Length: 387
Image (cartoon, rainbow, N blue to C red; front, side, top):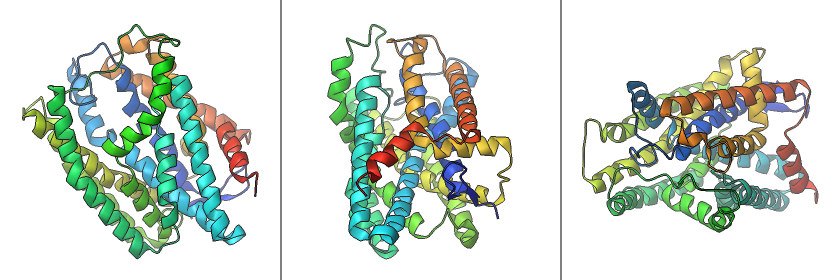
């Protein structure tokens, strides 16, 4: 059975589905974040830049269908699932109270890591957002799935009510389909220092309001309580249902946004509502992707080099997320190589593929040499040093 394998670094059994999902998720995040630095191209729809060639338009189409507002929910699902695994393990070792303290400590350090990333590098941080989410949902980990499903329903319903209206208002106030890239080409590391420091508390607040993750983290907790990715062989029927059903919802929910400015020219408010629907159906996309990776974990041969490399990156996802964000800033922003002034949609996607492939080879090398991810090692030290 292929769903478990032994981590050569820690000598512990790991779920291959989880690590493949984490490693693949990092590629989606790269592809989602790079366009945010293409500041010399006219804005397209929301955060997308306008394409200038048929290939550009096709890649924008693919990203809106597969990546945008789908990579982040996958991250949230895996984060919630990981909380369940930590909670369960620490409850067995040290009891419920200590398990809660360990998770809270880990979440506070995630917030610290994210603040350093945003303040020092200016990367597109999501660590603070998930650290705060973890602090909010930790008290739910003791509940059974019936209560978790109620929390999912309530939090998702709240988002369904306000997200489309909120984004409709954003575009109405913006007076354009596209949001401008917040770069001018005149930035230096020093003259943006104050902006980066000010952004530290704003980033997680903005994310939780405009791109809510609490419902999705709760969905991850629900999946974790079912052992859906650790024991996928026991849930094949459910995994198939979630994969087909949730990815279908995700696809259908993306169609209105894809049509805007090409074949459909709605009012600005309606365009914002369409983007809100895109955000909300991304919740289903995250669940669908997680279920898909659960199915893939059943049949994948772990001895393959590519699979080993992706799982190696997945085991070190914190380290490589930070590396990717720093590389994106260094390569694309005006404070360093400024490639964001010259790349097109197509060449930016190619850069993302190359970046992921190169760092994938680094992860594979680290795994072969039995080297831990430095941030994972440090996080473990900070989290468990008092235990």
